[in-house]
Amino acid sequence: MVNKEEKKIVLTKPLQLAKESDSEEAYKAPNLLQRLLSLFKNVRLGSDLTCFQLPPLFNLPKSQLQCYGESVYCTSSDLLSTCNRGQSPLERFISVVTWSISTTRPVSFGVAPYNPILGETHHVSKGNLNVLLEQVSHHPPVTALHATDDKENIEMIWCQQPVPKFYGTSVEAQVHGKRQLKLLNHGETYDMNSPNLLFKILPVPGANWVGTVNIRCLETGLVAELSYKSSHSFLGLGGNHNVIKGKIFDSSSCMVLYEVDGHWDRTVKLKDRKNGKVRVIYDATEVISELHPPILKDEESVWPTESVHIWSELSQSIVNKDWEKAKEAKQVVEERQRELKKEREAKGENWIPKHFVVSYNKEVGWNCSPIHNCVSAAPIIAL
Image (cartoon, rainbow, N blue to C red; front, side, top):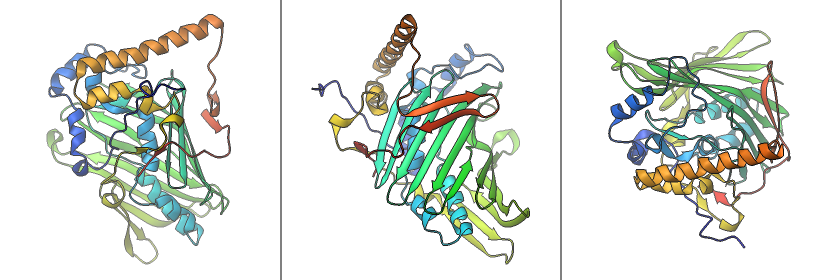
């Protein structure tokens, strides 16, 4: 029997629009300048920050696996079902573009989620959507996601590797890998990528999503190109932030069908190039605000590898602002991982993911294929 005292679970509020999540500000340490100066002592220009470990003062009370998962299961609107119910390929494609935008979530400068440990999992259900993530590699960090909805006959597979680089006045995390959404009732597969995350240190600290997201339906030939950007005025003050601009076109004829314009944290509009009509396809306040923490349905069924269990002591300490206890809790997790690595090396064993078949080559990069066709219902429920 599992000792309930050992199976501690800490569920925290999802990342969402700033005006609805002021409590997230409590996770920032009071002296940002002092923390930045302490970081500069340990990094060099152009250095790879993949293996760099942040002290708890810089952490949100959650793992990166949870942040990835929240972008899928934490929404106030069921945009995935809307994708499946479109009457035409073009309607479904526009809905997929809208859903893709909804996976972009606010980030805060100066705080970051924990780096997942090898084999860490995050398993959550929302309605008929079951979501499973696994950290399939630690160095480099690679995360796999598999989600299925048996009622809507939808499947999602992600394989992502963040590669952060330090550039003196900024840190940019390029997100390598592919996201795939399958609408199985329609025989359609949509390939897409993630925007990159840019942390500006000078002249004014801030965090923004940047880069180009390409969405392509292999069967219909429809393509979307979405550019994420933020402009700054003199000395970094003011400017136009969280902008998203792009187009939807038919790859067979290169004809532009729609123009996309707006802000991913406010509203995004679609303009029909044929008749000039404009309509709102995404309203962030309706989708990623007023989100609630998941609830625990069945404690006994929570896996030992679950994020909210592994990091529970650290998360609770950060919420309580007990930084000394947080430091100790983080060291316990990291030291345990070092011990397990030494044991594997002593036995000549290679670690193998439990839920994905993983491969890598220089041309394609990382590929993560789910072992099982469907994701089972989870003991943690998203509201």
